[in-house]
Length: 261
Length: 153
Picture 1 (cartoon, chains in turn blue, purple):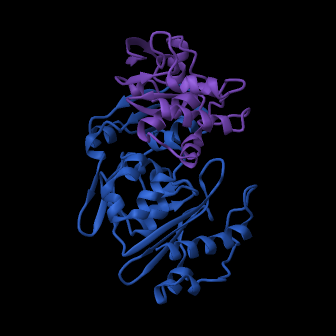
Picture 2 (cartoon, each protein chain N blue to C red):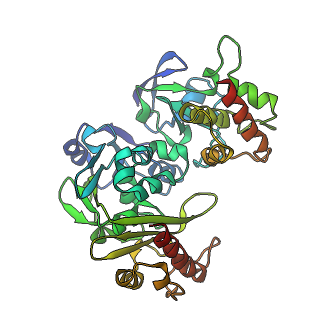
Picture 3 (cartoon, rainbow over the protein chains, first blue to last red):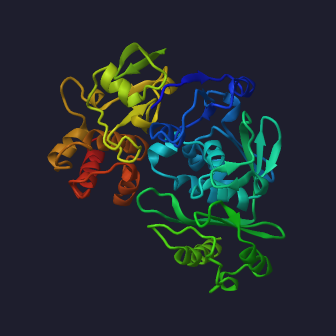
């Protein structure tokens, strides 16, 4: 791994002051460090943000659950408050990677990376999340821009993610048996008035399946999406699953999620 | 370069290391604690698992700088007065290893499991060892060893 300068920031202000065009923020490092080791990314400065106290912790208010960006997956999966308010979010966190990843990886890191097969981006879309940064608030639907691409500007730091508590919800992942990344993951959330069907792993970026959302908003039953023939032309195709198989899996996982709600 | 201060296996250590030093490199090359193995070096195999402040992590995927000030336990830190840890005993007794390369990470991961779940089921053991890969044993005896150790710890 090429050399760089390591900095540990005390607060968001210091972190963004240290940021430049050749720097990266370091939280759990579960993607940043392997990418640097493989030479896929090089930075002059790594700015460690996990010692910024304000960025960790979980708060539940009447309508929402707010999770600090540097909160680890294990903290989300073990949190009694999250389990009570949004049980599907806690079980999503419990299914990420392996215990060592969950002991280090953070929610902010996951969504800032926006891996097309990551779990948390689907939670953000399904649960109408608002991403709080040190500069502004961004709606989840405007945050995830494309493969590994987000609305974040250079030096902009995610501080917290605010999830809307749904009436019912479930996340159903068909994991790759080796990496535990989602070959397809579907997060169904029924809110007052509408239903979101957030899909990860199927395309180059997480998305809300409008067709299924509409059908389920009309009748929240797995029979209303049974046999739906989704367009597979934009779906990923690789050694693990063809585009056609993914299109079929999206419906299967969505049905499972509705039945589990 | 920066100063890395850690408490490793109960002993305070302080060494200069460049900022890009991985914890695995720091343990193996700066402290000569070669019990922590590097298998894949891409965070998949788990041979490099150690405990940092009581939780297991893959030391090939953490910077030494980024755990500065922590308490680290490696496989060398498990024995007491020359006596093996119950987990090590169980792996030996039940043939939970063949070539032994993955064993340090397996043992450290399994010890972390029993710290958090005193009586894990077979499924819970297998789920927990998701991040540890063994190419020899087929895992049967590893699971049996963890169950045996659970009765002794």
